[in-house]
Image (cartoon, rainbow, N blue to C red):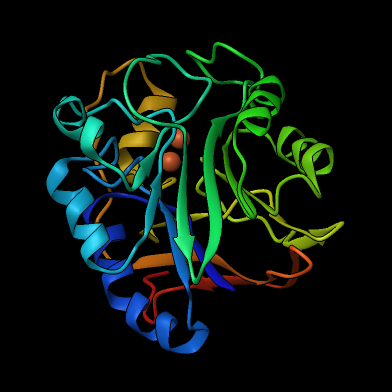
Length: 261
Ligand SMILES: [Fe+2]
Ligand SMILES: [Fe+2]
């Protein structure tokens, strides 16, 4: 089974970048399943029904979320019917949405779970280690993939070792900066952070000047998403369904052709 994981899609620049690259990536990797993080898809924070549908229409099969799941009020109007979305299991509010969904892919039951790391994160109500144990007690599937949405590499790497063999992929999201540590841990595909699909000249997808102003003064700024040519980040994984082991991991990072430097 071929699986394509796509990092946090940030705003319009990120969405356009996915639209541009996905057809070529589909041709090259022949994915049976495409999973993307959509927590920043609507103007950098959250997601709307229109954008959720737009991402599915491009062939994304499952959208994982993060700390910005509920940043747009629109989410409350459709999350109950969004059967291609998972939200962090251990982050408040807990009353809306589902944290693990199972898709059947070529006759194989694939579970996809979404969790938040607890280091430097707000509204996390339970350790992702504890939440994941509970999920594994309840969910039975042939393959199980996890988007661990967290700030620190240590937490994501430790989680990977702890759950290796019991889950079949652990991909980190949230930092928007891709890590170069893609590997296979006891058969489990892993990367600490997928990186983002968002404006290349930006601070994590956000307007450079605005973020500098925030760091250097007391001026309150509005959240401004950066525009312009974007970087695409993700991970391709090939799984052997019989052994349930990842057999190939390939990090994907496509920078814009023309960068103003
Ligand atoms: Fe993000
Ligand atoms: Fe995040």
